[in-house]
Length: 437
Image 1 (cartoon, rainbow, N blue to C red):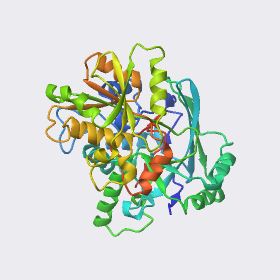
Image 2 (image 1 turned 60 degrees about the vertical axis):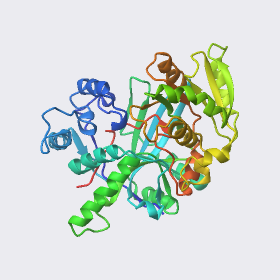
Image 3 (image 1 turned 135 degrees about the vertical axis):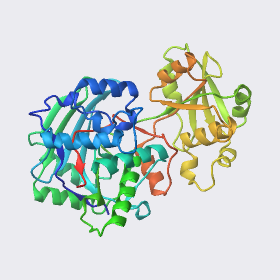
Image 4 (image 1 turned 180 degrees about the horizontal axis):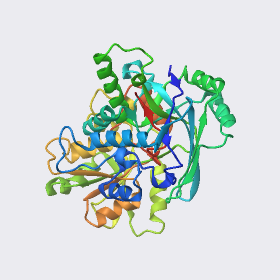
């Protein structure tokens, strides 16, 4: 089903830009203004200048962060800071990292993948998107004519055919090998042998791909493709008919999904005072003192105790000394509060019940919730501390979503609420680029 091809990746010339750890940057959606400033100062060649450049007060339609990113790309190509590899390749990216004291490696195949409209179900989404992020990525793509970071997509490696091919190719000398200050390590290899790349392509020919991270970039690439096809007589081989992806096996031990815990502020006092009574009508509630011994271990145990068809999550903020473990008791009533067109699997997701039933219906944040603030944290203790510090009023702690659930929701032609998953860690931008010209 999916068509993958090698491409001549554009990479940093390590003779000029020597310290790759100081040059790569996170993808745009996790670059805060403070981090952006730090990256600008880290190196004159830091990739943030292309991936997420500065906005200036004097920006115009012809001089803005997108046009400056394009000018920087052209300048670095002209100076040899960036250069295209001599031969088309499929790249292997080994990303080493640690989380909660455990070591992981996530192995990805970076290739260009033929763009397919969603209704073809060759490439399948699992999560909703934000319009402003899609517009931002489209503007950058239009200016650069290049993919700056790969979309992360998952696939089923039936019979471990891909793993065996990568094991052969993974013994070669890496093009780049370096460690970041946060302890993450990267190795990048190029697979140029036509026999191996064609065998890899064959492995994906009968399998759909599931977007894990990069929905905005994929939709922007589709929009760019439509624009280009409207402008010129195109062929199927044009570069803009493809998008760069990092393809990872669902079963890879390095597929780590963190839950985006919800932080809510700006809730009217009346709505907040009525919340406890409303929750009791739908949920069984277990209280857990915040100062209990090994409280976070107990939170994890109580959340993990629920079966796959049981909805449960934790709430902090109604009582400054207690966490509440909420277990949905009345699924039928809750289901009526979730838009009818969603699948039954969607309606049984913790995040769906939280977003639709509690945030939108019980708290009224779906309509008339002016002034409400929603933020996300990927660590439970951090979320609770931000409520204790009165930065937010409530913290909702979710269980992580498993890869097989992502596949099942996508196969049901549905999408989870936005910010349902956080694939950790983010793959860096600037390791390899795919040019569309």
